[in-house]
Image (cartoon, rainbow, N blue to C red; front, side, top):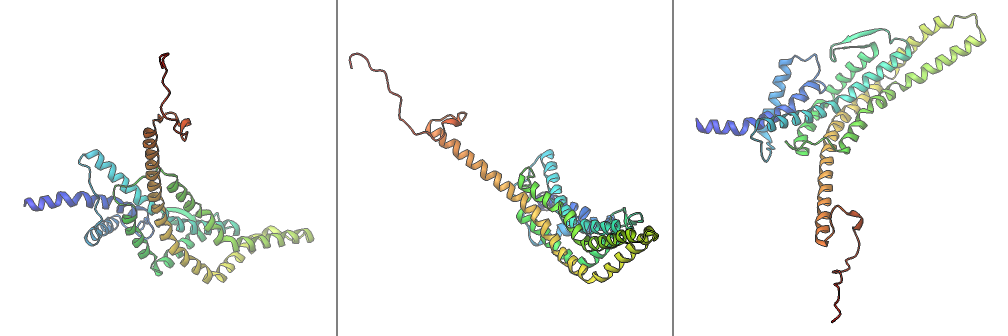
Length: 310
């Protein structure tokens, strides 16, 4: 009985740290983190992933704090690591949905909104279709397995207890990934934007030539029809693009965690260099608060005052 209690006291704190990182994945990542998945199912997935990771490939921290407050802070840090991974992984899906909403604005269907059960929010018709289509394509291309593989890789890239989000490297990478909402959305909607611009230009020229034609009614009829027809034409290309974005999703999520780890290593290296410079200054007799004298040649001891006898 004492051996069982001893084993539990050693492994349960580590297990809870892994759960803290995994529960953020189960709350915000694509597929398993969507609102349509029941809460009990997400908790079961979280506990199962944590248990099988520790069972198959344990990456235990060197030391765990004994106090409650340091341990609680460590749990929050692990939750932030999982949230960072889930947020970076879900950017691609949000970008694809944003591309569909841009298409709705261009073809005049932005006022028609529907409830999206995946995100628990109201979105436009094409935006909802793009989101659901992206989920189907990514699951059919096994992108969820690549996402889990990238997630388990984070325990090697950023081990437990080493989270530090105060570096510019991690913030810069997060900004770059977040900017894909506009980049990917415009890429998806760009063919529709060009065609709708040509339609608007043609209707404007028609209005100048034959002013008796009601261009406004033609606009309401032509733009949705043209947009939906073009979506049907580029449907196969759209699926291929979403297939490429499926692998990009896992890569972006892993790069976000890698950037945080590289930023931490860069800060440690910078601190080590500053410490070495301070040690060098102290050996040379230069006070650290006077950096202006850094690099001056050593002129030897100061000359002493000579007496008249000398």
